[in-house]
Length: 586
Image (cartoon, rainbow, N blue to C red; front, top):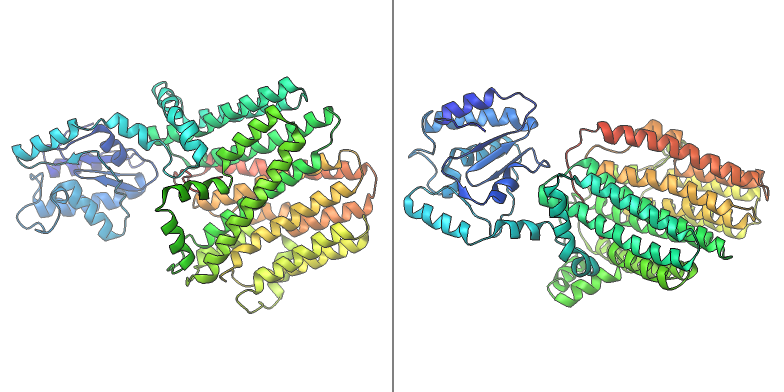
């Protein structure tokens, strides 16, 4: 920290700081809470941020900051700390400081300046003794540590998390912060705990099930703690958001596998139920992701359904009821943990399938109503995101390149649904191993290409990726279950897990602002239609032989290897802006 004698000296000192460093400018008369400065000056997610009397700039905003500072210096005089008589008389007092004027200049130049909500925290630049005394009094009346702890908790969370976890997990987050632990370390600890829980469930004993339930809840406490630690200490990162999201899926699906292994040891094969639960949960998530990406930057929202939702949010009990009915991660994991300890894996999976099905119907119905009743214009960015989420491979891309785009507002989702029904219907009702199923896969690839031949800007085009996910995942599930080959369903579980990881990775790359995985990766692993066709061919060629299990296992390993290597390479070296997931109740 350096003290500048005046505005001109401040400009010289900032210019001397190496270009790759963040810089901050604080008015020496600043009075406020330390956490107010922390919110304004240390959050890594924004190129520039400001609170009254203080401004910070990341390296990418340094050039704009220096230009604005030179203009402000010329306007107020090199030796003046505040604006002169020519300052805008209508401006708020805090904007008349040099940092405040520079923040306004940055915004005028096109650089976004984040102004965090301070709530009860004080941040002021008093200009006389009376104002200073008032600011100091306001500061002393509020405990900024208490505010910091409250703000560590996610604003919109599920009932179980809000009342069963957060009241004490925030203190665990503070304990971790004071010992220098990072959110990513806590996320990793949560993963390890969940994997141990899965191992306990795999024992197939009542003691193992009880231990698994307890450990799963401990893992969830740590899962809440990592996000609260990130908010408490403002340690946000793109990799942190990716780890948190992908580890959540890895923990849950590994636990499903552990339950399935334990059930088999007890004489009850529930692998099909385990894979069904994973497929349902993954399809639920892609509905969330697709809808949100389709409307991320939509122009206008006149949906009466959205207005009704906002009205219901003003009634306390309806808020909690609507959050619980979607079976978010807190309620879901609590249900899994309790049922694991008290019942059997089969009961756990039945409860998951019923609960997640009801939740999927509720959320999808609401989103359909919103989409049909809103007047919104989708952007090119939204269409590009949906195309990336579709995960079209060489077959579908080839069809899309030569096929004329089908006209009609609902054509794309209808064609995608038709292809999905053809594929799943063939897998379900045609004789197992029939080459007609391969022909159905060819029809599926053709219709998949037609569905994405035009930009996905229609009101219901966000349904295209979920239909493709269902087409691929359910086909793999059905063919493996009907094969009557030992261990085919566990092999299919591994394949769907590898593919689902790729799809979650795609989502978080898009959310991080870095775009989807490279096209060479999508082509290498075949796209959704290529993988579906390949599994159909394998089922026809290796009908009722152990080679089908071997082929599924090899395909799962190949997809996992390619996807994981590229994903790890990307996230370790990514220069994406820092983010943190505050969104859906996963």
